[in-house]
Amino acid sequence: MLSPERHGLFRVLCLFALFEAACLLDTGMLFPRESSSREVKELSGLWSFRADKSPDRNQGFDKAWYKSRLRETGPVIDMPVPASYNDITQDPTLRDFIGWVCAHYYSIVWMNGVKVTEHNGGHLPFEAEVGSLIRKDPTQPCRITIAVNNTLTLETLPPGSIQHIDDITKYPKGFFVQNIYFDFFNYAGIHRPVLLYTTPTAYVDDITVVTDFLDNTGRVNYNVSVHGATTATVKVTLMDKDGHCVASSTGPFGVLKVVDVNLWWPYLMHESPGYLYSMQVRLMAANERSTHEDVYTLPVGIRTVSVTSTQFLINKKPFYFHGVNKHEDSDIRGKGFDWPLIVKDFNLLKWMGANSFRTSHYPYAEEILQMCDRHGIVVIDECPGVGIKDIRSFRNASLNHHLDVMDELVRRDKNHASVVMWSVANEPASEMPPAEFYFKTLIKHTKALDATRPVTYVSNSHYARDKGAPYVDVICINSYFSWYHDPGHLEVIPLQLNTQFENWYGKYQKPIIQSEYGADAVPGLHSDPPMMFTEEYQKVVLQSCHDVFDQKRKQYVIGELIWNFADFMTVQGITRVVGNKKGVFTRQRQPKAAAFILKERYWRLANETGRLPPWTKYPCSL
Ligand code: BDP
Image (cartoon, rainbow, N blue to C red):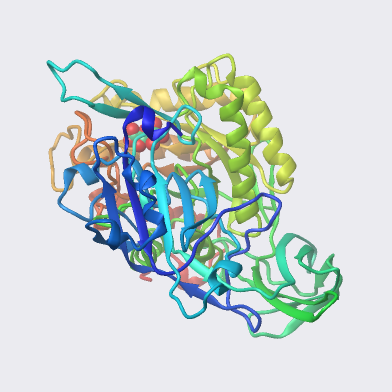
């Protein structure tokens, strides 16, 4: 993070009425859930918000705004939480604000004026123990203040840099811009719910499950870590969908055997996809003074994942990714978590017959992964390693932060059946000399964290010398033939795509996912013969690629993910028409012509597997 003093950045403090958090990697990050021993309180709603517009933009810290109610420090505005603050008001300086605000990217949290935590990095949860501060004076309301800074540096993920321009004949005094090397708007604010939750003094701190099966018997290897107890008894019970106990065990680690197992299957690969058991962990603990009971229930899908040189196997059967890339992005909310949007997106995914998505280009809210577990939507879980283009972002400071982010990501998402692969980066400048050491280290580290899932990073087809590729399990390639190269020449697609696949497979002999392809289409813009930016052009780009995928999926191509599910916001620029228009749905989630092409194709692909029951045979209406 760049210091605000040096760079003259704004400050914004968010304040309101309860708690929040930070994290050390030696503790768990179980999703906060209610149980007989735990209470969860969601602190979503309207918070007070203030931008620091003082000349040195440091007033919030100088005057310690966090020590009193924010409205007592000066004028505040209402700010919904969760939401990006950028598109909530009519103020362009707030839309493009760079500096201190709430939760993405760097956060400091105070409770009743006492600092409780700091966290470096957006997208992933953090927490802090605040019991002693809440209880200090139970008759007084609690106050939480969060300062967040969205400044990106060469060491953050994603990286960025601040550029000051001093030419006062052309720019106002103090003018600066934030340069970014990725293609989505750098929304900021408290994007995810803020939760206050309780545990007994001794509690289940973390659970790790690894599953497999042999014939009809499923196995759940579990490991429970306990916090706050000198002696503890752990009892683990696995229940099926109807609440019947199917296996149990005692002890902090062990194996649960499930006879006649219901495996977790992807959507459209099985008639009941997304089967989840409930694993109840009951902890009885005693310390010198008292005994405690803690209960935590984790949803568990039993499945395996593996990779050969030509296939991706789920439960030992070939799986073909026919899906999308997404963004957390919508009108008004920006990247703010929103249940109606999430449910609508899942309905659209199922409508179009998509069985998978990649969390381009950062970890999505954990609630979204819970939906994927339940609906059988397969996930490639990507960390925020996007836009690593500057050679200085390959230094140790960046690598160490990247390793920490992978620790946090795996710690949060390791138990999700839907997550089948980790993606450590998107389109880094992997031709640069330091890239080899960087990716070798990163991929090795990720495999050490989780030996059960393959690891990838996403390459751009135009990087001929991809230094990290020898270390990945699956090759993921993005390419935009007849768009960024040979614009308007649709006729080059079959040849160039075919050459791309042959080159990559020839060199690495690893299965390949076409992890991005597509074209911008401004909804309602038409032309025949097709021209760039029309719905017809987008359709033809897709169809030309599909013909090649159909040949290559018989060999080593194991998936295709359209760029993008929906239109999304970007910085302003001459190649963007109020955002990136490569969505097959508009930003308001209405289909463009391309959505129907994909729907037709995805249902046909699903149907070809022959494992669908009659009611899902295409064409069908959901
Ligand atoms: C790809 C990037 C993606 C962009 C896309 C595009 O991975 O983030 O949005 O290009 O230009 O290379 O539309």
